[in-house]
Image 1 (cartoon, rainbow, N blue to C red):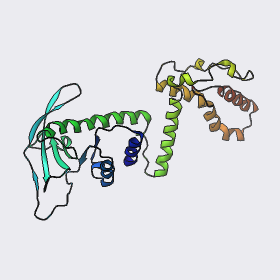
Image 2 (cartoon, rainbow, N blue to C red):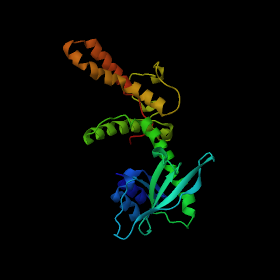
Image 3 (cartoon, rainbow, N blue to C red):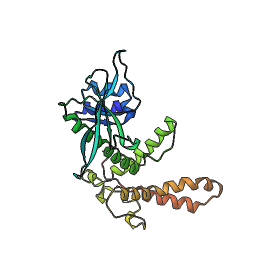
Image 4 (tube, rainbow, N blue to C red):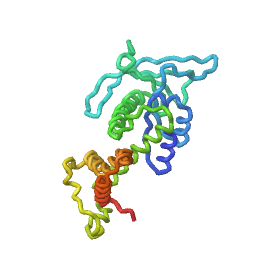
Length: 269
């Protein structure tokens, strides 16, 4: 999937400066092949036991630690350490170890990194640690997005069930997106003359739970209120089959007819 995303972005003409990823991708030869195919610069994490095939007379060696300043977005800095791990002879693909403590090498602040980034001798040590450090904040940002969209809520293992869940989430996201102010200029339905006179009139904002605030959460709240009548109807339908109530049937029919006059902020023509 990651390779497909990279391929699509390249076809769209996106200018990708550097690819940062964790060891799941750093240990994937197919993913790296895709990056190399498009001649992209990448800095990928690898496992501490990452292996490289070497001729019998070549060895693995670790160079001396070099100190560098990890500069954060708020311009504050902390001391970090970096050293190169050389597998036999150097190639276009180099390997590095970055840590906060070169003596104890704590697991939660020590990383092994592989990159194809080419830089002048001495410069890569100063820049590589800061570039790779951006990955943490990228993941943090995406985690917030996934939590807001509900993509971290499922605990499913079957691909069919995961696909079904994603369909639900993306459908909800589409509903919210199509009812945001960005689509107001495309709205052909706000004019009351476009509505048939025989429709029952209803002011949706009169609902006690209607939100008048801006933002997608308010939009989602209001959309839930719009679809509640049909959801409630299908929930009690089995009971209506057992206990006939013409008034309840007619009441639901009238309510759903009124709700159907809700028009989204986009044109279907």
